[in-house]
Image 1: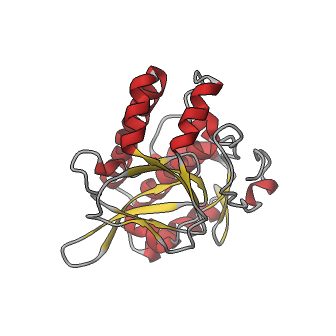
Image 2 (image 1 turned 90 degrees about the vertical axis):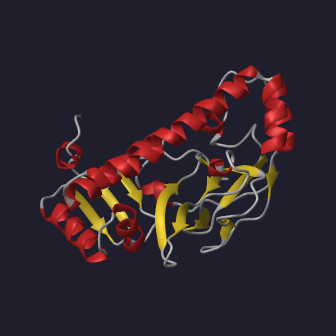
Image 3 (image 1 turned 60 degrees about the horizontal axis):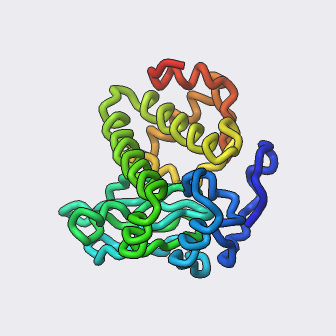
Length: 250
């Protein structure tokens, strides 16, 4: 995989999706793993993780109703989670970026409650849940870290509820951009200059807005010199103005 990226121009260098990487040399291990794990513990964890070649854009990682067997760490690329409505439409429920964990929706009922599909070529680490559970009993730090990840996932699930509860389209779009910005910062990438891997259609679906409304909000934010928008490339020019639009405190 590529080395850690910190400058805005370098943010857009594509990841090589190296599937032979291990936990010890992965640039995302500080996000995925508890910092207190010893080298020997990391080796044991690495032994249970399965890595395959990258998934192509539009390929499913799992589908709603599939038997739950593993959780997944995104190593490169991006995925979306969605549920299928009664009339057969997709309802996007979340976006996942490198260093983030998905698949935990299947823990309670042993079947996945949603589907996960790649937004672009993506690589994941598959972590069999039965093996992870056994290993966690031997490593309290790992168990605690996994509980933290579950808690974080629950918290992030509330983001959608919060977004949809906002009155205006401006608030919803601005809040989503702030969420992506903070998640980029957690990966030590630029919080102000990034590429949106999802389409305007997916953004609108996620936020409960039409694609035309999403496009109008981006245009308005650009005219107000809050953003610079070039198709999927976003540069936040005035973070405080975006926070104000999102109606959140700085």
